Image (cartoon, rainbow, N blue to C red; front, top):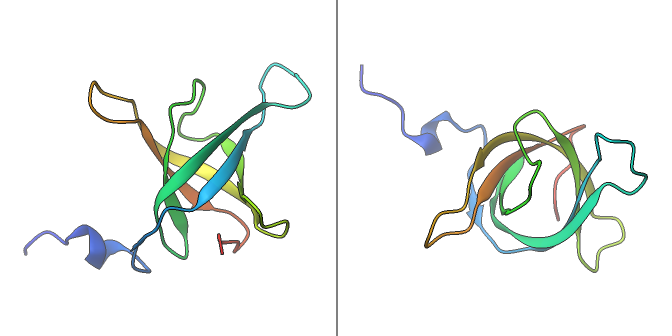
Length: 105
């Protein structure tokens, strides 16, 4: 049997879209505000997003919050599924699974 392509394994298709977002990563050392940064999505699906992310402490299993900039209702909790560190000619990226049936608008 031939291996499935990424698109065939996904429950919903990816849309290449750059959405400016604010990323809040809860702190593990009890600092009240966690880590906050601004970044963009690379692509999105109904279940998650790939984001551009050069953030220390971002690793699989971490829960974070994505907030679409300029959209007060666009706050989405997510779980980091995978992380690719930055390289000499590319930014780091992370795959985030949306939690609780949420999604970015």
